Amino acid sequence: MRLLPRLALIAALLPGAAWAARPTVAVLPFSIDKHVVISDGRNFFAGTIEDETALLTNELVHQLVASRKFDVLERARLDDVLDEKDLQGSDYGSAGSLAKVAKLTGADYLVLGRIDRIGAESEWKSLPYSSRMQLQQKAFVDLYLRVVDAKSGRIVTAEKFVQETVLRGPKPTDSLGKKLVAETAQAGVARLVESLFPLRIAKVDGKTVFLNRSGEGALAVGDRLAILSQGEAVRDSDTGEELGRPLTEVAQGRVVAVDAEIVKAELSGDAPVKEGMRVQKLPPEKKTEASADLPPGPRW
Image (cartoon, rainbow, N blue to C red):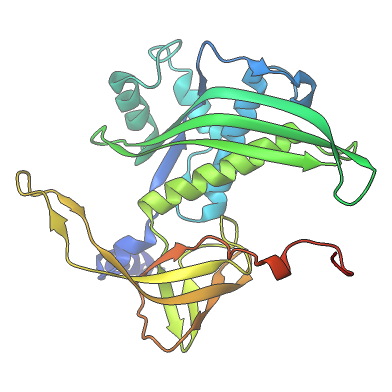
């Protein structure tokens, strides 16, 4: 038993041991632009807009945990920190407050979100090739996300996007608000993870590759992928800052398996690929006229 602390120390000093430590993230409560109101369709959402904001914060935490890229600070611990006298009623987005939250939580990154617009609507639409009508519900939210380096206060990444969700022929048990919250959190986490941990090949086994993503995320069976090699860094001639590395497509593949632990894809072609190469999701293939969603039977 006395050897255990010694073995732990040796393991910590081994090359690559740093990879075992995931960064700690604290998700601060979402803020709402003071002019935001829920436009139409209030019955589609549960409670007030503040309730929806809390749901979105909680769902974002869940999706970050599911990504398996971060250690996420428990909400109870974060609430205790935010209840500190010096932080009560303060603007969490200010430099001073962020620094204090980071110090008290020990987080490596702070995630902040703001809702700029949210709304919903419903309408009856006619079904193609039918005289029947179907109820369609649509909701949207304008979201601004940013990740701040807790030590330096530098904004690591910032994402602003509009998320939309649709329910066609909703059942009584369906919830447009919950669907919007879940899809918004999933899309937001996918963007944040991609910014901090770009999609890469983790292992190559012949024409089968395994990606550095867990099953929960923006990838699904059938998604088309581009495998990219990185060139030499391009640097700013004035500051020396690395601006990026040019990417060249060397192969394509398709996702064939997605589960809670891993994402697997099959390559097309014989181009050599290596571990660490970048991977990019391609847009769906456009349907030709022959494969369009038309009912079977003759076409006049």
